Length: 208
Ligand code: ADP
Image (cartoon, rainbow, N blue to C red; front, side, top):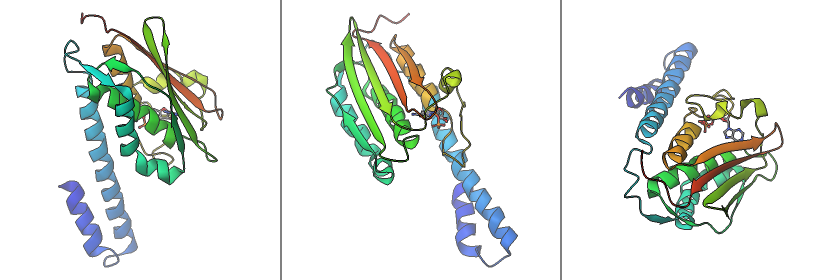
């Protein structure tokens, strides 16, 4: 309601009050929209990885990745990014979890991607009893001193005027990966691009 009515105010009264009123209404519209995204993201975070792990069926990560790319198509096109995807495995996971995981990581790789020739590569290799996934970009990179912090709830390294976001995406990723007995981490340095890794056991251990 707040979002809808401030947008209505903006449409009907823009230019009819004074310049300051236009600014105030614009700030209210933007604030309400940010609040909407934040509430949606917090809901996803609190519900992430809630479903019972035991009945998580086999899911083909290649098919999930196709959906992720279709969801992100607009931002990939806007940034002119090239996303390369290797052969991915089938995992014992709920599809929604794998989708949230890959979509957050690939979405970030595009959002924080390189100014020139942004490239993203998604690969998976089998290592002993684990599948090791990597999502690599050639973007702005992360100072190694923040490589733990970025996985914390509401932790952001940029203001929302630089890059839109709520600081919840990577916290969701960590929650999902840990729920399946895996690990997630990043290797990066400033200006050198980032590679996010996550390792998932081929067979998830029984729930504690
Ligand atoms: P959001 O993108 O909404 O801010 P995330 O939890 O997904 O939240 O990411 C947390 C922070 O980590 C981001 O604000 C950004 O500063 C940094 N970050 C995430 N992914 C990347 C990336 N691929 N390259 C550089 N910085 C990143």
